[in-house]
Amino acid sequence: MKKLILSSILLLHFLCFSQEKYPKNYFIEPVSIPIFLSGSFGELRSNHFHAGIDIKTQGKEGLNVFATADGYVSRIKVQQLGYGKAIYITHPNGYTSVYGHLSKFADEIEKHVKSIQYKKENYATENLYFKKDKFSVKKGEIIAYSGDTGGSGGPHLHYEIRDTETEHVINPLLFGLKVEDTIAPAFRALKVYALSSDARINQQRKSFQIPIKNLGIGKYIADRITASSVIGFGVNVFDRFNKAPNKNGIYSLEMLVNGQRFYYHDVETFSFSESKFLNLHIDYEHYKKYKRRYQKTYKVTSNRLSTYKDLINNGKINIQKNLNYTIEIIAKDFEGNVSSLKIPVAGKESNTIFTEQKDTTAYKVIAKKFNKFKQQNVTVAFPKRTFYEDVYLDFKIDEKIAKIHTPTIPLDKKFTLTFNVSKYSEAEKQFLYIANIEYPKYPRYEPTKKKDSTFFITTKTLGNYTLLSDSIKPTIKLLYFKDQQWISNSKTLKVKIADIGSGIKNFRATIDGKWVLMQYNHKKRILTYNFSDKKLFGSKHIFKIVVSDNVGNTNALSATFFKKQIN
Image (tube, rainbow, N blue to C red; front, top):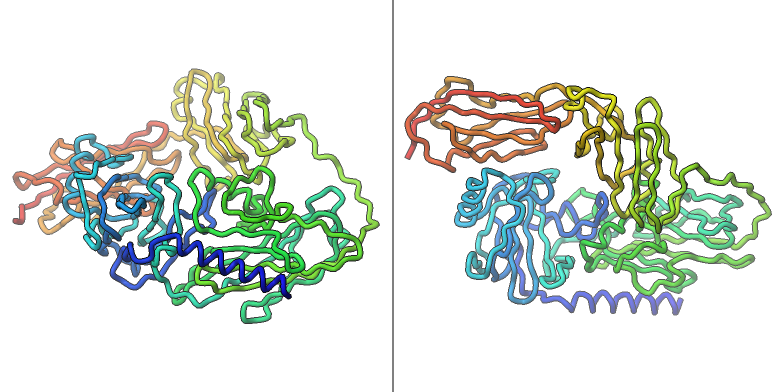
């Protein structure tokens, strides 16, 4: 009990110290509505940790977004996916705030960005960098309007705070931003893992789920297990904020073994370069198979996350014969609401003998070396340290499908997959591309590079790939107006585009022969032009759009519209 009290005091001290490191009254809230979150900092996402917080915008776009402190706009980024339209403000206190998925920027900034887009005749601007004297801003000044651009799942504001010098992201709640939260995290499931060759759990040499029971008020207990040698645990756990149904990430996870801390991590701060190690932090194989993430309470050798603190034996537990253990896993949210899961373990030597079949194939990957294998018309090449550890690769060609193992192993680097296409005619090659067909009903185009008789891709995803052909043009449909129609009261012009094969690659729209900026909502597949961008002369205008897919199939549409200028 004394050890448990001491551990809790040390954890409370650490949390208080972490929060005192950051200024509490320097930044204001980026929106004027009550703060409710749909995503928390450090939340587990696909191949990365969430680098900010997602603020709900009441399901609306166009809400005012404010500079949270004095500073200057140091960077603007506009992209089809990712953060969509994003603005970066550098502050004199050493931090940079980031605002993503915006619908538009404040007038002066919007005008400048559009001038560049029209000059380059391209919606995506990649990165625009600015000096201090270009766009200075004051705390509380409107800098943009909330939206749903980029890889957003719905209208919201993505908000970050970064260390300007190191680019490390820091939990925005540490700077005093308040979110109502009196709800403790919830444990959904528990797994136990055999981590050594002689480990046994309930007389078995495997990893499996252990039933847990919710006792109420943040207390959970698991079924008793017997074990021997080195084992580890993983939990599926989430948190909720008040008045929001979203299942969010927790702030910290701790594991005690008979009252002694063996494992601890929190999401105070991390770097983008280490975010990929999320795939080693979770049970990646289970996630890929069943879409449920278990956070391990132990660290594997290749995992270089900086969020772990004071680990004993990397969180791995060596269970001794005839000894009893109480394992307690503690999950906390940022406000300190806590839930704990107790797991009774009895040390029991197993007499069960397992004769395991060796996992071998003809293709052994040595992680520290370059590896290249070929079958029929397919070659795979893995640079050094593509894999985190040595592995026997399951590689075969079956019915024109290249089966490159299964996508249950995380990779650190991209590998190259090459198809020899010399048997195809030049006309056939034009429409061919490499596709990931892990889900056969929904083949996914992979950016295919073509060189003479070989097509190749680089990817970090193992699985099934094949060559597919696409000879069908994209489709284009006018929305809310028809050819030869008057649209004087319309503020926008919209078009819906789609492609059932390789997918849309690019599009180009003009009015009266001059390029116009169309913003693409890839989720709805709608292109929108805002008539406020450019002044039209006369009442009769010709709109033309050309759309191409990823293998070069092209479709075009022209329409005449009439519009009186409204001053």
